[in-house]
Image (cartoon, rainbow, N blue to C red; front, top):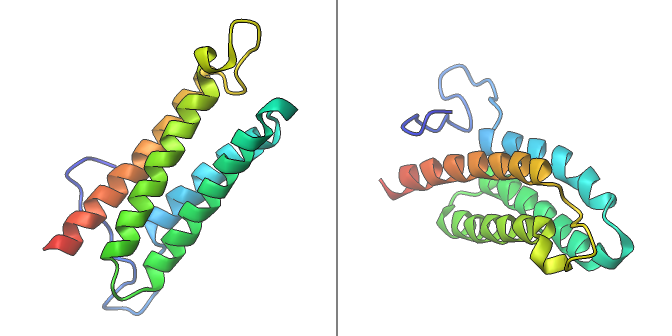
Length: 135
């Protein structure tokens, strides 16, 4: 989605037909990619994997809440914070310095890049959505 693109409406105003909330759809894509990866983390990284899963589920819950709420500003800010935490956890899970010289990190650099792209896309959608709320 281009940077200057408008955020699509949550629901169609004219025809009454429901259109999917793009932020939630992109969050689903990120969950489908990231959740199985965290299930394959080694036992010593179980706590990190659990926190990443909690964060992804929290982001998904917030997108559902955002779709249903009337007052959305605090929910979008909370969602923004959760997304920032998940970004840092993804970096941590792929950082060799965090795991020492002997052990490989649970995420490869390729997996980190793909996940970062998905998170960035969610972040761009969220930023555009925040701009529409401020107007």
